[in-house]
Length: 360
Image 1: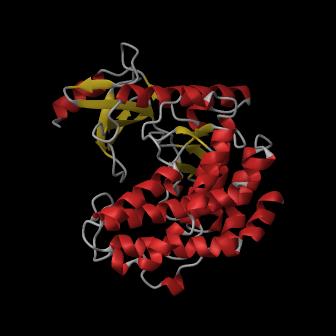
Image 2: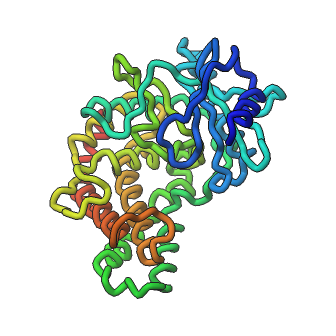
């Protein structure tokens, strides 16, 4: 976009002060992002990727509902809603986004004096990410999750993911199934596991809550001086689900001793000490809102999210590497194997994981 077009877009929003500067910001892969500085404060301008999020109305309604509910609870607790939650800046005619031709834009208030990390500098950072996501879940306790539109249907429906795997296996487009018999058997033996959380949600055994669904470290802003969790960002994938999804996905990536695509599986292990660190942060911050069943299901959620991710990598490998970006031969198969190694070790340590979450 030209500078004139960006100026036009920014001018449609009810921001404070006069624009001093704007520049590309961050390293997100989905939305184009700019840092806008005015004479009063800083803002984040984003172009919404409507090729991924096709219903922009529903997307922004989700985000606005969640932000407003969180802000109300922060104010009630005597906190700072501008710092502890995202603030959606409306357009001058009161909308949550602005359409410019075929492009869609939104603006948030920039949360100053914070850092976003792609990798933890130490265990404390991982602990604080747990605090951040635990606080996020607590802020949304009591929110009617049925108001939320699922922007990516069946995102964590492991039964659907399993069925997609079976379809890819039966099609076997590139005749790859014969070389991954061990990985195929690994999934087939765990079909029943794929049903557990889905069935517990359907029966009401687990509470249906608003979930973040992208609980990476860099989606928690940390105070740039104290290192403490300040706010959770990137709410594009807020949907209905189990709190175990968010907890489990953090464990999946954060308790792996190696990279997601590590080829030497002797370096890839599930770290029970890091599981304990994150559990203390997350469950300590979430307070007493969880049911006993939800707490007991946290280790299951960790296994499920890791298994689901491995199934998705294997499905894509069988299908010809069409979904996940690959940069080397058998990249998706390598990723599959690291996830399945973690699943095996979580299954081995399951009783210890249960003991951890029950004793936080």
